[in-house]
Length: 126
Image (tube, rainbow, N blue to C red; front, side):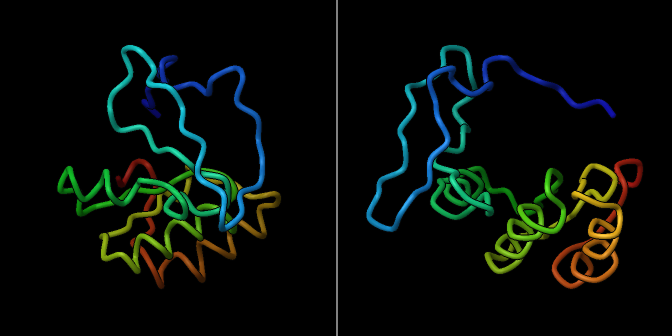
């Protein structure tokens, strides 16, 4: 559907997944040569805002509209959608660019939760 994948934004080979705790500082990655400055750092959980600099980056750039897609529909996508809504963004969830562990779970989120906190639409509508 026309997405661009940038090798310069791929995870660093030596990064390992680990849980964060309230007293733990986010992992600071070295800058990646040639990568844009807008790299979100510190995501360790379900919500793209929690423990990251995403909100700061979006505010600094004057972003008001936030389109969300990804995995899992009923977990990370929902968490990020709710926080984006609470932070005052105009949230759009791109329904056919999300997936869950089952079609039933995906459809439940799209049919019930998405419309409370966002404007759900397909990638074609977007």
